[in-house]
Length: 206
Image 1 (tube, helix red, strand yellow):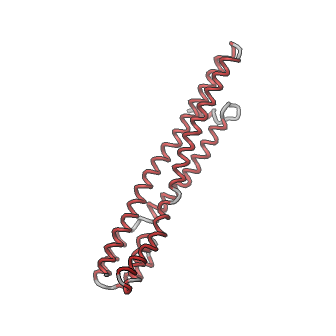
Image 2: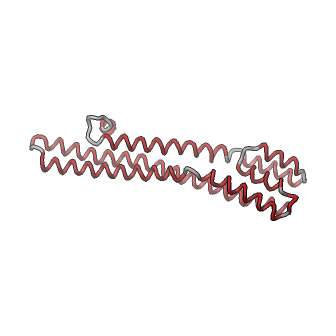
Image 3: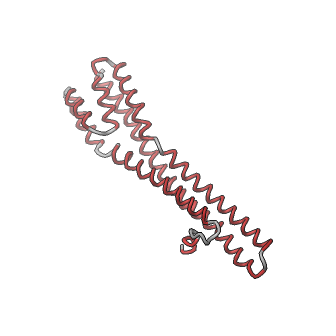
């Protein structure tokens, strides 16, 4: 660990790769935090309670109360439900059109920026690979051109550059890819739920 920390020092060859990988990781982490808060907290917390209370209003044919309750709830699925109930007097086609219009707005909000996190993970891996190649070039150059007395240290430095950048690239990429998988799973579940519940409400009101 101490050797890796030393690799960030300007006195160490290849330190540029270490700092660039770290910056890329921080960018990916920033988007990850924002997406986790939006998808797993803002878009999901209280979802079951909302559906239960909203369903109670619909079952009792208290449509105005259901609409007010949905409009007061800041969840993507609540916006879909509100659009359907507001268009209930226009028939199935009108409700479906209203549902689709809101769905096309809310679904991209759930999936946006996830691809950026994946790109940051890929860039981290490629930068680690670039650092590895740079370290190998440094090593071969040492073998060919350094005096015998300096060769051992130059070889050690070259290998340290190659291994350090590879390790940091993987340490950056792997967590970001895990986060991408979790975000994709949760966003797809919310999108499918909006489709399913929206269709059920349309069928009940048609």
